[in-house]
Each structure stands twice: as C-alpha cells, then as structure tokens.
Length: 323
Image (cartoon, rainbow, N blue to C red; front, side, top):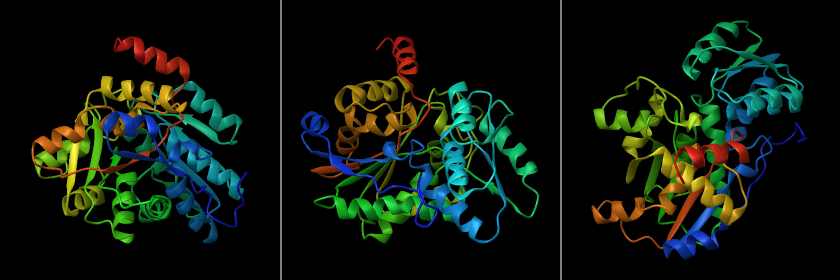
C-alpha cells in the first residue's frame, strides 16, 4: 500500500510499442496508466483531490462511479485511513463491487440505472461539512492530478510526439491531458479525443456548438458513460490549437482491446480500447486524407486502463461483435 506522505499514484512507464509501431509505420508510444494499483489513471486526480481534502479535515468520502473512479477513491481513502462510501449504477459488474468491499473496505450502495442517477444520490448523501463529495471527473484538483502524466511523458519520451490520443467520457482525463500538454510546452501538438457511439457526449456537444446531454448510454464502454461533458472539457476542446474529436463503433474499441491483449498481454476496457482503436484502425489516416492532420512520425496513446475488463468479459464482447 502506498504511503500517505507523497502522491497516491505511481509514476508509470511510457514505452514504445513495437507491434503498433510496425503496424502503423510510425513510432507509437504508450503511457501505461493501466499499471496504476486501482487499475486506471483515475488515482492521479482523485488521489490528489482526496489527499488535499484530508489535509483540510475531511473525515469521510462519498463517490458515485461505474467502477474506476470508485476504485481510485476507495484506494485513496483506505491509504489515508478515511471511510469511503461508493455509489454504483446498476450496470456496474458485480466483481467491481466485490473488489471495493473486500480489497478496499468501502461501503457499496447500488442506486440508479446510469451514473448520472447514482451521482445525484451521492451528492445528497454528502451534505455533511466533514464529508467530501468525490466527483469522478469534474474538479480542478482532479485535472491537476491527471496533468502529472504529461509531465512524466515529456521526460520519458525521446521526442515530442506529433499527436496525442486520449479517450474521453465526462472529460476529466482529457482536461488533465490538455492542461498538462500546455504545461510542458506541447500546446502545438494535435490531440485526438476518442469516444464510442452511444457514449459520445463531447462529440455531440462540439457538433452542436454547445454543451448537450445525450439521451442514454448505449455503448459497451460504460466507463465513457457520462451523458454530459464537463464545461471545462468543452472549453478546452475548443481552445486547443489542433483538436480533433473522433467517434468509433463499439466493435472497433473491443477489437482494439483484443489485439492489445495479444500484442502486450494487458487487459483493458473498451473505454481504453477507444483510444487504441485510433492506432489499430485508420483514424489518423482518415484525418490526414481530409487535411486535418499533418505528417505523423510519432504518436502518444494514453492507455487509461480500466478494471471492468476480465478475460470472460472480453470473450463475451468478442462473440457479441463476431470478432
């Protein structure tokens, strides 16, 4: 278990993927956030938020999460000796609830069909002054924590990438990546945000020219399952010099997960598969053919991870999409 003295996240490696570099004919680098102890990048931002709150007298935390944010919050709370209540939507896999209880000692409540309903319930629960409400993605301390991965990447990569690729749900990760890119002098580097059909609230908002709420989450990438992007995400996506929003089918995201498991022996969620689909598929070539992306000699993919992927679940998705 990590010490409560320093950051609660680990410095993760950025590696060159030989299989993907060979496939694409450009150097593909992977920021391996799947190696964080709770299973995803979420511990960076949520750990930062909870640690700061603990220093200011927080006595308990409440978090609504479909899995990864809850695992990060529960891990951070356990490390700091703070009780945690995690509210899960009904769509969350049972093994995630078991892990929260058995490994991290959190109280688990199931409420609501989708995250937005769980979140409303969690905010009502956390009205006490000594209780911290942990939003999965919409808080400056969370974005600050996530931005640390870009500071690491700039020290770990041999060169500045020609493009950064990142999955986006509600936008916490994307906010951290874009803010981190600005911090390290990568503001001129194109950023591609990846979503799946049926979990594409940012793409829908950018097309509409205003923040919109999609009617339902129909994608299997439940970790991308926010109905509305954060206001900060919408702002940053519009202000980044070269920003491209791309949506792929669930089948492409799942296929990327399967191929990634073969290539690197890692299991990641379809939410992470969405960003990997950009390099396993033709996303970059399509953007180049439309004059939206220049020459690419190197790409950095944020492998955000995810704890809801099991071998059995990947096999189920493989059969569902006839892969």
